[in-house]
Length: 374
Image (cartoon, rainbow, N blue to C red; front, side):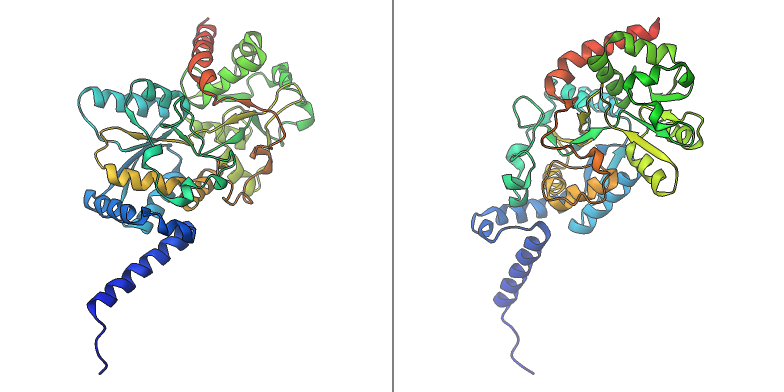
């Protein structure tokens, strides 16, 4: 038998193999390995494994609930306890728990309305200082030329998605697309009782849609659309997709785009309108904002998770689950409908602008509620 390999050599080989694998996973430039982040990364990973899990609150989308925990655990061996629910409900529960001294959540995925409340109540920790992966910190990997933070300090709320939000979806078996050549076409008497939407009185997709319609087209349009047209309003978004597919409500304002795309792939005759000549496209991040809660029960696992979800690998998992384009420049978008990918030269209404969301939108939503109560 040959001489056994020295223990020190085995350790060196193991370390080299680890960094080679890490470089392949995150496309780490060779130069970055000279900057000392690797030791910190190893320490974070070891501490995260001792913590045993990371608790993430996010969208109830079934594909996201399956894919993100599975891929993260496969990569790092750390389970994700994924808690799903409507943004407003989840946000309210987290804040109620914290007022009672209970800290159960590490990471929150959601929309800007709810995260803005958390930011103002100072229950978020800054994300910027905990980012470590060169793949994440490399400004050339982001469409804006830098990480996109949504909060005024540009430290707490990281924007992972940016897409042209749909104005509406139609089932072309029941609606001729040529009949909707302007946003005002929705107000035609023939569509009365044929339109569906998420509840506009709540935060989330319904409130977002109503607020942006109000901002772009005024109170009279909102009144006619949500009252005179007698739309089917629900808090269960699955019913929007079902009504669209069956033709019961062949025009839907808020059916989830990912689910509509899956219906199209199955052969259903669907068409999505992202803009009209009298209604420019609007930008959204959907549930594609991520934040770190302070006093997180699993701080190292949370840090590991946020670095991963912002990396090319993690964000592509999230993008494929939600069928939404990201703010990274190196994530594959070939599987996405081209109309939802923003064009650099085109002007849009950014409905996730901080001032619109935190100042203008609140006033608009309150007015919409008053209109709907009459």
